[in-house]
Amino acid sequence: MTLKNKKILIIIGGGIAAYKSLDLIRMLKRNDVEIKTILTKSGREFVTPLSLTTLTQSKTFENIFDKDSEADIDHIALSRWADIIIVMPTTANLMSKLSVGAAEDLATTVLLAANKDILLVPAMNVRMWLHKATQKNFNILKDIGYLFIGPEKGEMACGEFGEGKMSSPRQILAYVKDYFNKRGILKNKNFKALVTTGPTREYLDPVRYISNESSGRQGYEVAIALDKLGIKTTVIAGPSNFNLPKSIKLKKIISADEMLSEVKKSLPVDLAVCVAAVADFKLEKKNKNKMKKSNLSFQSMNFIKNTDILEYLSKNNKCRPRVVAGFSAETESLNKNSIQKIKNKHCDFIFANDVSNKKIGFNSYYNKISVIYKNGSVQIIPKNKKSLIANKIAQILVDKLVDDRNIN
Ligand code: CTP
Image (cartoon, rainbow, N blue to C red; front, side, top):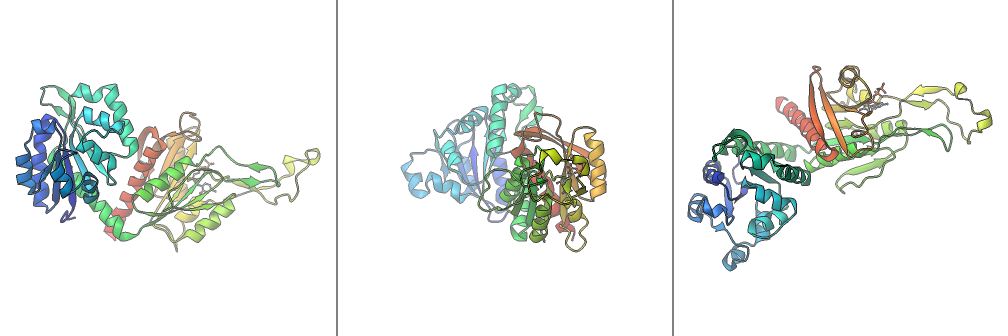
């Protein structure tokens, strides 16, 4: 992957690691990247505007109310110009300002006004990094959508050892290459995805139905995460109520049969993610009128199994999506039962969640996932907001999609 003609805005914060920005600039320049820089007031204590200008062959921006700079390129245009923004080193102070949306100097104003991805590269003393306030800001910033690389474990400039060391210019360069590589592949491939989500309802008569506790939130978040990666996504959702960006197509259904029929209509796709908690059984013959409790007999009701949509997709020889993933809702033996499910359903991944834990899973903002791979190995995605879990899931799926494409 070439970085030729990519445009990167580097914001240099005030920390001893700031001098490493010069190394990164040299490496990026060797890769034909166009670079502009913003030097914060405290960053100026560690590197000079002259060295930045010399290396980038472009003026370094410093002040928000600088007449000359604003005439040249204003602070909004700076972020519009860039393909990605890197903030290195990102200090504890800068993290704190960004977490509350401060816009008090050129750097914070540009970051607040940015419409591009922002990669934060933290560097600070280990105690500062592990401080509850910094960790809280870290979570807020991740939640907002800032990207992070590091900090790494190692010996710091202050002589202490631990987590807080800035990732090296080489690691940052590798991250940036990987970032553009994935985006480049995704942009040109026009990948399509379908996501099933929510509960389904199986009516017994016009007023009674069988369903489950699923809210649909996790599936909506997976769809949003895929959409953010540039994948054309269709959501097929049972009764649930969340907003989606306009770029995502939403098809609302009630029963498992309707979900299956919409899934079939949405094919072919490159990726299918079955997050829905589909009701497993339906009444063989639904009652046309409301059943009277005087003659309502559950023993005489004949239930039949719904088609397993995930299995249908995985085993669909003619039109199998390149990557098929399912979820698994369990109240016991989470990994063991989910490993069995991936075997039975022939999909590529199962994302398993323990729905007996009220703090995660059904109807919660949070989730914790065991990712089950085809070979039976298990990777844990620790408890986090469903939106962040969705980003991780989307990344795993896209990595698989991209890897498979590269092989073929
Ligand atoms: N699934 C599906 N169609 C069905 C039933 C399940 O597509 N008729 C999918 C779900 O969307 C999920 C996966 O299969 O991706 C596992 O669903 P889950 O409810 O955990 O398990 P079941 O297969 O229904 O099995 P059990 O209820 O015995 O755990």
